[in-house]
Length: 160
Image (tube, rainbow, N blue to C red; front, side, top):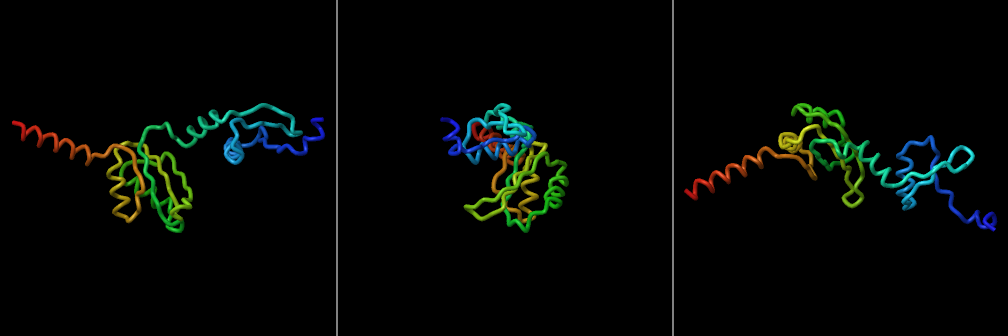
């Protein structure tokens, strides 16, 4: 009975020797919570759970590594890894991860950069000075902290 209806089943799986990104793509494309793993002759080998794929994806993207994050928006033809790297390195920082993607809603090229230090206000200012559109950033901002300190000092002075 199973043999007669097996032609109607989709054969979604990954091979054991494939890169884990292929498993991530398969899970995403087919909305799977587990990804079947097969060997050469389509022999079942096991499964990969989606939470494990997410953990590995987090490791490879440096999501849990310390540091700041900057997201730039630009035209794809304007993207230059060498220039972006130079601007970051002139601020005594290094790129620990760089990913690119396409945003269909804005028709823009998105560059997500993970940097090895938290204090990124100088780097953000450098990108703005060179006319990069900074879409988002996360990290400590020296200027914001100084502004808060100055405000606190002013409030303290006024309360005397």
